[in-house]
Amino acid sequence: MTERKVISLTGGRKTKRAPQMADDAAARLALPAFEPGWVWLVGAGPGDPGLLTLHALNALKQADIVVYDALVDETVLQFASARATLEYSGKRGGKPSPKQRDISARLIELARQGKRVLRLKGGDPFVFGRGGEEALALVDAGIPFRLVPGVTAGVGGLGYAGIPVTHRDINHAVTFVTGHMAGGAIPENLDWPSIAKGSPVIVLYMALSHLGAIAKRLIENGRRADEPVALVRNATLKDQQVLETTLGTAAADVARTDFKAPAIIVIGDVVRLREGLDWLGALEGRILKRDPLNVRAKKDAG
Image (tube, rainbow, N blue to C red; front, top):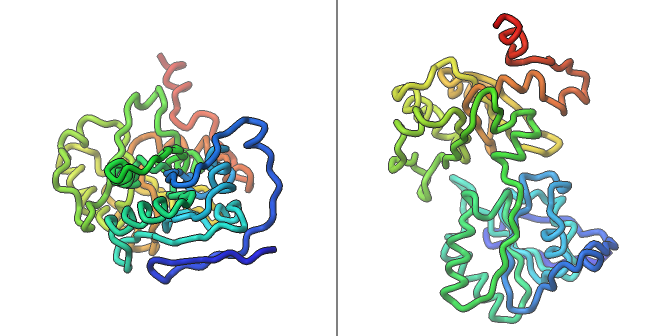
């Protein structure tokens, strides 16, 4: 195996050597060539490397340098070419992190050096991933770019927990909400009354530290305190954890169990479906309920 060079913008991340792997998917599917001087903004999905798209895998195998985020699982990085340089640029709340403008400037600098620059982000770059900001910076600098969408945690992560974001017996709409602003504060510019009243299912990203305050706002604006809530930590990874609770007790239960980030949070009756759809739990012996919503019983009674 070949040792690869690893650079960290914050000095806080190391990676293992990448295995030499043969993969002809790009050739078979005529996937695009990664041209020098380009930046590809790529979603790595919520964690499980099996959720990488073929475009993401193709990008990893061609990139000269991979600038990756904190939520990118290191198993994914092993698919990068052995000649590629890995550069960590993770942003985590409460920890030393590079500024967004510095990350964008670094992408521009590397592209102008003629590098094939892969900007690798957890989930999807355009779902609370600041991918739009980075893409606009590239446009302003005249740098060509490509977007490769990824599976976002608010869909794929919940799916691994056995929770669908939509189900026709419960909801025909879902709202995705960020749990904190750029400076870490709770979003005050959101229309919380409309969110509380208008969306049967709410999915919160990066909201663990403000969960109590968010729950209070939602309850004050009409949500039930006993409404089901689920938190999924390290979604899709081997150490995934799921905490089922209610809107009124969620913050206390998080403190009591010492539940840690990163976590995706879902509020709504779709959480009840986990009793029947926890497919990972079933692999470990959990007996699933055939009718977790009692829909058949209601229809029979009618």
